Image (tube, rainbow, N blue to C red; front, top):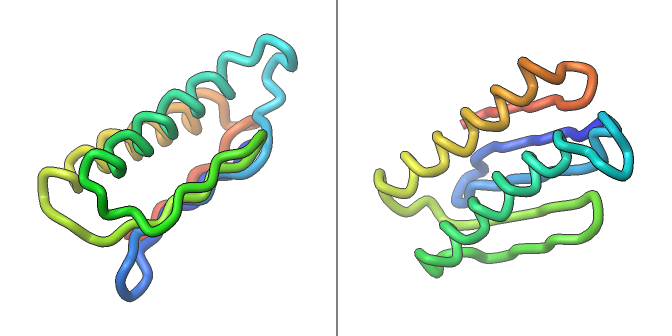
Length: 100
């Protein structure tokens, strides 16, 4: 199962994604969708050049970045909606916790 956690601490937004969805190992459309959303978020954070940390490895994504502006928050909300849609459709494979 992939666990997605998105929250805001005192200063930064934090995104943690851990694990593999295990929907169809070797040809996993759920993992591919999560990866596409995570990479899109990384690119958006990189565009604003406000990230403090981006760490991507097999089965792991960690992103920390400063609270910046409403335009970026709109992008983040779209990504969150994508993660939540995956959780609704593949509830045995994805958990998404959002606290912002």
